[in-house]
Length: 338
Image (cartoon, rainbow, N blue to C red; front, side, top):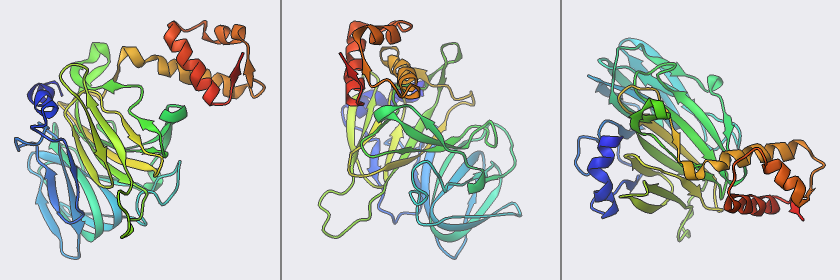
């Protein structure tokens, strides 16, 4: 959000505030509290419940919540209505292109009681209107492929104001080993609908498909970047159960080649529809995606002459440098250009 960036960008750049923390798997409750000065958020909270047989009780007051199981099972009661669900064997169990996610929306001014076994993550933010409880089951979850080449990823939308909430937008993103997400670069920290941008802050909860061994020295890792090209240009080494607060700016993330990466994400703002504005200097990557698709559909094209290549590029206003980049990518994808 614009106000969050104004408050925290310089402080993050100077390492006075750290947007990254590693969850120890033990703490239960709210972890990122936007009311705390050292948390670079203004409206969005994030936490994790470690579920047991005894009920955890929470009065939501003026806030709404979205809960997403990470592993195990849960049963919940919201003002007398009962909900239950499970996520067995963790978020990677179904394999690429599939999802076993589910999500429970908890409205404001209700009493939530929840118990079970395992870990359930949650987001909370000020509710903008009264809405009923809502449960998205695993059978109703859809997986959508986005991007191409080393920035291809799977997006799993869970909860948004389009279907259940009044403010919170929640989902998951799966990245294959070595692949990028948040690419091409985009941002959503200004309330400028005419420019295709909304004013939302965000939190990522990173998961890696890696079973820890006692002999592991480093373990799975990736890199989370936070930058706006002006006040803030930082990169962070992330690992299993890294929690990352995103006040605004661009926030690409890359998985190392050693593991798949899946991250749960949640956004909140002032109620406007989520809109992500692409950074102009990198938007040509979307045109590259169109060219990749065209070449893939014509299986006969393994070799391209310079004339053919220029013909494919003709509809796009590529610079010389962008064409050179496209040639390098196509050659790496096995297409020879002579």
